Structures are given as structure tokens and as C-alpha cells.
Image (cartoon, rainbow, N blue to C red; front, side, top):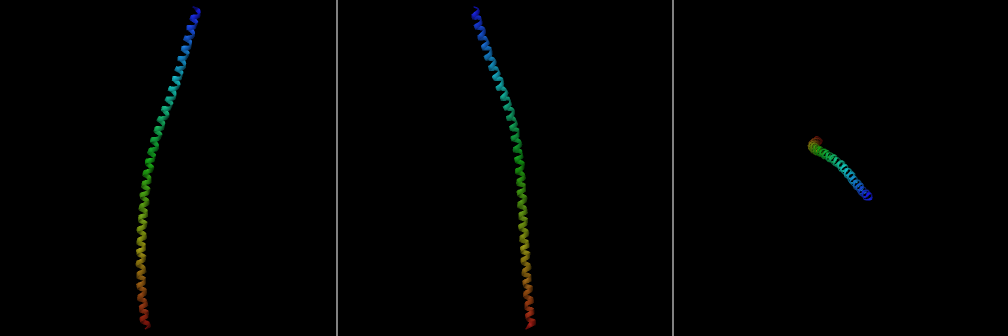
Amino acid sequence: STQSTWGIRDELNMSIHAYQTMYDTACQLSMRQGLQLEKNKSLVVQLKTLNDETDVLERMSQELKAKHEAIEKRQIERRQIEEQRHKEEVNFLRKANLQLTNEIKRYMS
């Protein structure tokens, strides 16, 4: 009977030890899952921040592209105006030169 009590006691101790091990394992798993959840929350916040920054940078990029295109357009227009002005000046000087040449020829003849 004493031997049977010892056997029951040993079984109970083994069962308690097994349950304690399962409890400890469950606590560790719960802790890891909690830490992973916090990490995931942090990553979600970080992702949102990066997405917001990307949106801001994309808007800035579009604004800079628009400014660049406007500057290029103004430069093209200025160059065209300068070319037209130069062409008109050359034509004027050619006419003036032709008139002076004709006058000199008249005086010479």
C-alpha cells in the first residue's frame, strides 16, 4: 500500500511537472507573440510614416518638375525672341549696307 501511494505520488509529481512545463512553454509563447505583435505595430507605424514621406517627396518632385518645365519654356521663348531680334537687326543692317553701297556707287559714278 505504501508502495502504491509512492507510485501515485510519483505520477502526480510527474503530471504536475508536465503541467508546469506546458504552462511555462505557453507563457513563453505568449510573451513572444506579444513582442511580435508590438514589433508588428511598430512596423505598421513605420510603414505609414515612410508612405507619408514618400507622398510628400513625390509631390515635391512633381512641383520641381513643373518648375523645371516652366523655366525651360521661358528659356526657349527668350531664345526665340533673341533670335528674331537678331534676325531683324541683321536684315536692317543688310538693308542699310545695301543702301550705303548704292549711294557710294552713285557718288562714284
